[in-house]
Image (tube, rainbow, N blue to C red):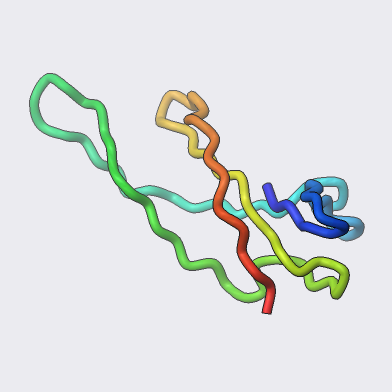
Length: 90
């Protein structure tokens, strides 16, 4: 989810028009199929993605954004939700 900051507080951004109207930004990525050897199949690591520009909807009223991010595993269990730090808009 994308959050934009104005008037000192963040609010969830919702796409106003088009095929994704009423939704927030939606980026779908695939993580390579990784299966550790041995009995313990738990994975831990860092995932980095490069988002194409624009990675937000430009609006002069918003000077900062942040994201909430999560993933689904193979069984479609949702992971913990993380929130990025504040990102200044150039």
